[in-house]
Length: 84
Ligand SMILES: [Zn+2]
Image 1 (cartoon, rainbow, N blue to C red):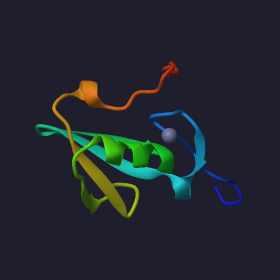
Image 2 (tube, helix red, strand yellow):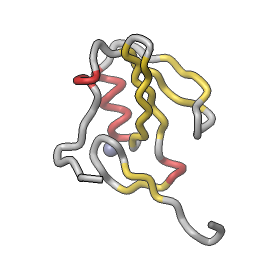
Image 3 (cartoon, rainbow, N blue to C red):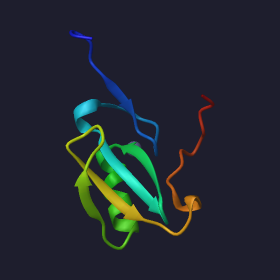
């Protein structure tokens, strides 16, 4: 993959962002964790929306942020879902 630039699609707003700018975010619901990658703008609004967060080692990134939420309904979703 050398010579190729990797873009990540933000799991909240859907914008394409450089891999280095994507933040790995985990949402913990009881014993389940959902892994999303967010752009810095969406991450900032998620940090505002939630009371507190923790940092843990990431799966793909060096660090990930963990938010604890009550139910998967609280996961950020794109305004228009793109079918995969
Ligand atoms: Zn975003």
